[in-house]
Structure formats: C-alpha cells, structure tokens
Length: 478
Ligand SMILES: [Fe+2]
Image 1 (tube, protein in one colour):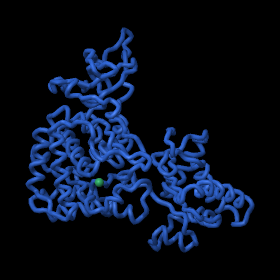
Image 2 (tube, rainbow, N blue to C red; image 1 turned 90 degrees about the horizontal axis):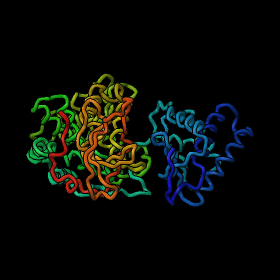
Image 3 (cartoon, helix red, strand yellow; image 1 turned 90 degrees about the vertical axis):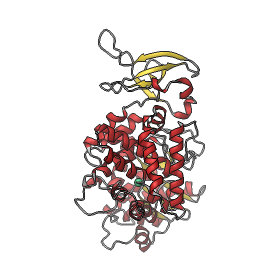
Image 4 (spheres, helix red, strand yellow; image 1 turned 120 degrees about the vertical axis):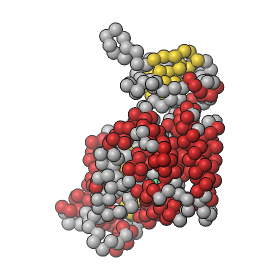
C-alpha cells in the first residue's frame, strides 16, 4: 500500500475500522445481538468511529483499487496486509466499496448496519439502500460503490486542463471541442459541421504531430474535463484504427463517435461529475445515465453518422457478464466493434490522467490495466493492437534508465517495445547528451539497461520543442 505525506493524513486506524466492521457482520450471523463477543467488537468500532467523528462531521472509507482511503487520503499499511485484503475481498463480494458514517452515530446503528451487510444483496423489492437502512433504524451509516472515474481528490486539486505548452494543432482541437461541448451544455444544438471539421483536423494533422501524440499518450498531471478527455480518446481510437488498417470511411465514423462518446456528461450536474470520493446510488445512476443522455443528444443531431449514438450508449459495456458494465441492454447484447474500440481508448486515457484519489498511471501501467481485463471487459485482439499501436514508451515521453540516465524517447523498436531509442538529456534538462539505443545488450546477451520509470510531465518542466527542434527527429522505426 502506498503512503502519504499529506498533512490531512488519517488520524484513526481506518483499516482496523473496516476489518472490525466486516468481522462484526460475521459475528452477527453467529451470535445473538447481546452476546459479549459482539458487545466487545461493537465497543472497539464505536470508539474508533467516535475518535474521528469528534474531529470531523463525517467519516468516509473508500476501497479504491485495493487501497483503503479515509476521507480521500490513502491509509498506510499497518502490517496487516493479508487480513486487510481478505476484508477488501469480502466487501467486494457484497458489492460494497465504501462506508460512510456521520456524527451522532449510535452503537446500535453500527451493529444494525453490520447485520444489514448479510442481507444487502437480497433486495427483491428494489428499494434504495438508504430506505432499507432507514427501515432498520440506521440513518447515520450508509454504503456505496465507487465509480472510479470523474471524481476528485479533495486534498489535491488537479488542474482541469494542461498547464504546460501544447502542440498548436492539439491546442486548436481542444479549443474547438470545448466550444462544441459548451454549446450542448448550455442547451444549444451540436453543429455537425463543426464536428466534421474537428474530426478532419484530428485525422489530417494532429495524428501526424509527434509532439501532440506525446502529449496525448503520456501521463497527464491534470484531471481533464470532458472535452479534453474526448479529444484524447478520439486520437487514441484513431491510432488503434490505423493499427487495425480500418478504411478511411470507417475511421472517420470512429473518430466522430469517439469525440462525442461522453457528450451525455453535459447533462449531468458538474458537481456530480466532479464529486470527490464515493457516489451515492442516485448520483451513480446520474453518472451512468451519461450513456443514454449521450445517445439521445446524438440521435437528435442532424448530420451525424448513426453509429455515433450507439457508441455513446455502449462505451461502458463489457463483453462478458462479470464485466457487463452499464447501461442495462439485456443479456447477450454484444457492443458494436467501434464501441469496443472506444472502450479501450477511453480506459487508457482515463488511467493516464490524474484522478481524484491517485496519481496518473504511466503508459505501461495503463496497458496492464487493459491487459487484466482483456477477454472480459475488452476485446483481447483490440487490447493487443492498442498496446502495439501506442508502444509502452510513447514518442516524446521522458524516461529514466536503470543506469540513472534521463532521456526522451525518439524512436520505438516495434519488436522490442520496452527498449526504445532515447535522446539523453542532462539532469537540468539544458543539454542534449546524444542518442542511446536501450535495446543494446552486453557480451552475455543481457540488456545493458532497462527503462525503470516514466517521469511525470510536471516534474520535467521541459519544453520538448526546444529540446528537439526538428519534430522529424521523433519517428517510429519502420
Ligand atoms: Fe463515458
């Protein structure tokens, strides 16, 4: 588990609280309510919760990708990783990622809420979680599921858009997309001609700019708003289309659909889109509705290809039942192949951007996220093609080697994507130190060096265009 140096770091043992809650649930199914074992566990939990609620009106524990967060701040490993991961698994099997308490919570509410976890999944009446808890006399505890996108870490306010200099064509695309999205958000109609011009700009120019591709592919130190995310997803979908050798007409339709896949978010209140931490049921439904909202908006826009609303509707749908996603389109509905492409690009883009509760993932880690869900959520062939299309270390990314060298990736080796060619830079990023092929091996046949990390964009403070004045230097190997 990661650590934090945040001054608002947790003051109580959230891991113990979570473990205690889950074990109280088990005890509640074994012993009667007044049993001493239950009373003792209840005391323990009540005291931990009170310690926090005396300082703060609410207590929120979220489990996000296996890490426990208290009020948005990741908790340190307290040496009980095995017990904690067992608890996290148990929570996940109940469909719960998040536990909220508010000040004034009573001992009995904790017991009743823990007991309720044993029945949380049989909900024949379709009642909301809040109502079911209220029926049991629990009003100050609730549970939730995390929607891992579109949230913001309270402790760290990421900028909404890139702050470093952008490739001019990419900047122009972002501006056009922002205008189009603003028009829809303020109740106007999407203009298909503007969309077409933007698609043409992306296909004809942006995708040819190595500087733009570097900025789109690399990790991003900002939590991008919908228009920014959409342009990036469109370009990533385009790279995948090229890799798959799709014809020009299909590629155009794909880029248009990718650009507009999240347009439905313009109908979701911004405070829900940006809400930190866990969403309640109603908020989650609203966020999920961006798919159907998007389909509606695009159906009503004259001049778009009919596939665009389908992609908006399906881009959060998976292939297999265990990763079926949303919205509910009935069993056996396989997403359109263009929806499947956008789904891959969407998740990669989201992972490489900063998010509410975590740093942006470097490209190679984002590829692992895709690989883990290949075959269930994503089409395996598309994931493979995508990883090949983007390469692990995109052109223009700044990396460090196992020998402590820092360099910019200027060429990728298609047969050896983990060992690109670098242009080495001095530690102060002021001087170029010559090119280096990291695929070089020693006499024993072992690699002389490995790429060990991708450096965050902000950290580098580096103007690539100055460092590499001729964009022609950045090239893919044939
Ligand atoms: Fe989406």
